[in-house]
Image (cartoon, rainbow, N blue to C red):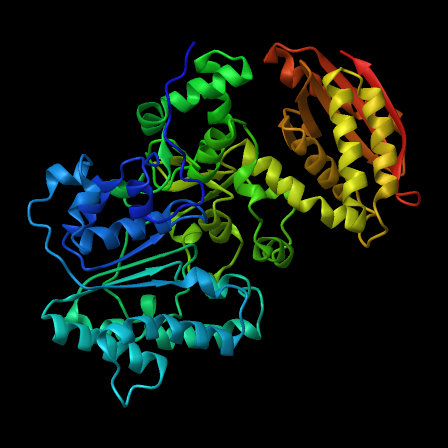
Length: 522
């Protein structure tokens, strides 16, 4: 079919005025802007993962408060707002201050202040950052006769990459605390304060002093304030789906299913509409190709460091149950990695048990699952990642062709590429490695699966088959098969509707690879 002429997708464009003025496609979020700016509170905080639309939302708020009504013509807020009262806006973008030391951070904050001081002037006695911000807010109010709007985007960006460091975190945190401290004292001069970020640093003055700040991150009315819901995708972006479906040679509904599987699945409260990752979705439409765009844009180093710090194995990242107070905890008081995984977008809310108040958290979608495993694989391969990834791809091909024997031969070669490391003389090390590799394939993989008579080491679904895998260390594949038979593991999966294969694998801790394996069809 003939595809209609489509607007350009605003990939990487975070400025609302640029999107509207240059006729990029825009998913209308202005009803949320109206709701936010007409609520009872004055101070707001919103946490969302990186590249999830926080900066665009902040830019939209700026245009709204500057009274640029022409930009909002035809959007939801155009029929809701009647006053369009202008306010002076101080907009600070902290994403510019990543990977910096104390002096550079102070210099960058000073530079952002100086841009407004050129417009409104600077008090002679204000030299420190907090004094300059206090003076600036008061001066703007006096010169304009209007209360001031303060927008701070990515407030925590300078701290994210040092959150695992005991030396640098307190130093940079003190700089940021001093910078933000005037917001409470300047309350009489402020109309609206909005901050975005990924994590919550409770020891910053924002959360320790602004006790009246409204954290809307998990509020039902703002569940879809960032990201793209399926309804919005079908309403605003259906032409792109048609174009992608034609490129892939798929029916429309099948293209939607593939997009949903790869990019959907986020929930920031419960119940909540399904929310797609906007960065990945728009990239997929722009490039007319489904790929791992969000993960490809960079995995934060702090995530890998924190996984090591909390000794989290790959299979432990998802499938978590916790109370809201636990997974939304401040960064400095983390007892486990759940809050960081949630706030960063690597796990999300999947359900809630109303009886206990427990939230069920898991990895959102296929992009995050495969991206995580790809990021973790170098921990096992060190400098040989490229060679290892090639073997992983060949294993995938073999399994898709139902040649598990060839796949295990490749696995044997793969393990020989893994450099020597400590703690490889236990079965769990190889179980973790199997989980990472098989998850990279995008296949269903689960570990320690309960049955009436015990736990199966690994269950994998691939190539139209279900594999029940038992692993042994320094024993034999025959012993592994015997345990499968003794415990009658396959009966647990008899109703799955797939052919079942039993796989027994033995690892040799001295050789650090598979020494033998046995495959039997049920």
